[in-house]
Amino acid sequence: MLRRQFIQRTSILTGGLLLGAGFDKTFANDNEPVSIAIIGCGDRGKGIMDILLQMPDRFTIKAICDVLDFRLAEARKLGSFTEYTDYRRLLDDKTIKAVVIAVPLNLHHDIAIAALAAGKHVYLEKTMTYNIPQALDLVAKAKQYPKQVLQVGHQYRYSPLYFKVKEMIEKNYLGKVTQIDCRWDRNWNWRRPVPDPSLERRINWRMYKEFSGGLTAELLSHQIDFINWAFGTHPDEVFGTGGIDYYKDGRETYDNVQVVLRYNKAAMVGNFGATCANAHEGYIFKIKGTKGMVSLLVNDGVYFPEPETRKQLTTVDGVTGATKIEWNKDGGIPIVNEKLKDGTWYAFLDFFQCIQKNTQPASNVLTGATTACCVHLANKAVYGHSIEKWSPGYNFI
Image (cartoon, rainbow, N blue to C red; front, top):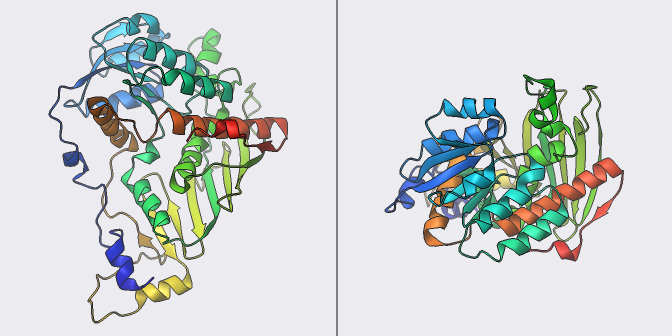
């Protein structure tokens, strides 16, 4: 890999992006905005509403739905919308063309199927389903509605940064990747305020196994999904451990987990961990290969070449006058040099285009089912102290 070839074959060193400042212009809108509704007005639902309100030429929020009155009151601060407490009544509204489903994980499957049956396009938050049987069923049910879009909220598949990293992997700038190290740490109990004790399980549903897949589903699924996408793979063996190691407050899902995914065909090991008891390292996503490593944050990333690769990159090329490589203070090369939007914005841009063109999104029911199976196997390994194996029945792609 000569320095000239490295610079010519990828734009990461010249400050450009495959999907950069002109990305929005690439998807110019000549159509009417899509009438959309939000089912679930918790933190994530309101966050998505905020994104959609930044895209008035593509989406018009018509209605909101939540079973908790105070959640509706919070969402009401963002605008005036028709309000429902029963999602089935919302789905009866023929003027609503698409819905966002941002409810507790155990409800994803049933509401998604009801929305498809009502003729709606669906943006379904990750993880796609609570367990593997639901993933298998949703894949089968979605086939009955080929004209409707079902997009799953793994937004790394739309981020210009992560798209560029996938391109780097495909063009062999990392060499042979063998190790993936991921963390998503915090020093917080993950608990939301509860105005009425009777609402504890509804509000803090992430802490109870009946409703939630815990840290693996809510956080680590993003990184697990990216590895599936970037390498076109899935794990063959899943190991795990964890516990309620700090917050002895009645929760059921673990506050400290570590999962190891073995990708036999790709000859890689992926380490995915999260804790609620220390926030120093926060978010870590490192992909390590024989030629170099990428170290990622949610919206930023750096490429660290190995010594031999670095030597090739720094060789003076007086003939071609190749663009100068910009190194940071740690000896890495920034992957992007411009401020990116939230990954959800890019995801909804694609959601709009898929609705208009009747095409499948990058994060769809098949890719979503694959990651849902990974998460379910990981939780079985963590809570059951077992080694879980991939089944051919999970090969959706």
